[in-house]
Each structure stands twice: as structure tokens, then as C-alpha cells.
Length: 238
Image 1 (spheres, rainbow, N blue to C red):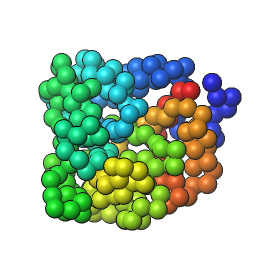
Image 2: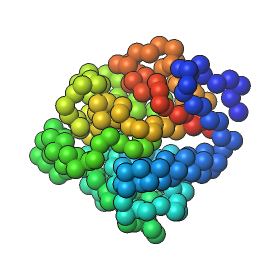
Image 3: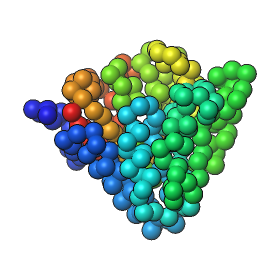
Image 4: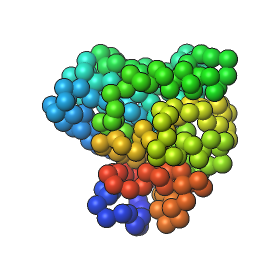
């Protein structure tokens, strides 16, 4: 258990969970509550989640939430440029862990597009994402040890454009330092306006990264810094 909590902007929420299992359940409950509010207020809801390994338990928990899933649209904050059948596909992760039971009725708007190049795929995805009823109702982000979030990686070509809060683009190509390194990411301009924003992290190493990002506030060196402000709620567990 951490002996301290990072110094947050006034009004930002912080929640410490005792274990990854508790975090997954608590995060799923918070997301489900926010989706219900959106459904009551607007009759529809847009959920954007992150991929990777950590979200599987959260997605499993969320799949059992009692919601009008037929009026929920789901998309991804980022995607590996691989087909859904590939084991590294974030869309495949959602198919395995979220879209089952009643949650299978949700509408999925993916980022992956087959194309001759990553740049062409990003252009096609940008047009396809015009179907998103923005702003995002609920956004769940993760964070890497290098301070990246979504696929906004430090030193990646195009990062300045992706972090431009006034960019007209919804999706841009991005390069990760690890394989598979070709990525598609939603831009800051789309992500920053989400009505409910949550950041889920685990472990002391990521707590240290978060603390550094909060103190340095260097978005190009640690892109997660762009989102460390209201209305973010941070969920951490050891």
C-alpha cells in the first residue's frame, strides 16, 4: 500500500483500492453508474476505454452491469494496427471480455482499418469515427511506465499534433517504442472533452510515474500530463 497520495489539482478525485480485483470491480461500478446517468439524461451513452493487459478484469466486471446496452456505443482510446483476430488487438480484447451477455448488444466503433499504410489507416479511421456522438460520456484511460496514455507516446512523430487541443483530427497514426509499434490513437482534442474521465493504474512504479508527471507537467515528455486535470478521477491499487 502506498504511504502517500500524489499531490493532485484541487477537486480531482483519488481512490486507492486494496487489490487489482477490488479496483476492477470498483472501476466497473463507477463506469456503469456514469453510463446510467448518460442514458437517463440523453437516451444514449458513449464509452471509450483503453486496451492492453490490465483492463481485462475491469471489462469482465463491466460486462455484467445492468444497463440498456443497446443504447451504449463503445470505442477505443487507441488500437494496435493489427486485425481483430490478432492476439494484440484491443478490439479483440473487448470481444473476449466485454461484449458478452447483455453487453453484446452494445454498438462497437473500432479504430482498426485495413489500408496500405498506417497513415492511410488513420485517415480512414478518422472519417469512420465521424459516427461518434461526441463528447464522450465516459473515458477510461491507462498509463505506461513512460508516462504515455492512449497511444500518445513520448518522442513519437506526430505527438505535437496529437496533443493539440484544437486539432480537427479524431484519430492519428502513432508509433510505440515496443512491438507492435504501429498504433492508432484518438487525439487529445477528442479525449479531453469527455464528461467523465477516469485513469486506472496499478503498482508502485506507475504511482511514481504519475507523481513525476504531476510535478513536471511536461506533456511532450510525459503525455499523460495533458489529462491530469479536472474532471479526472484516478483509481490506483498496489
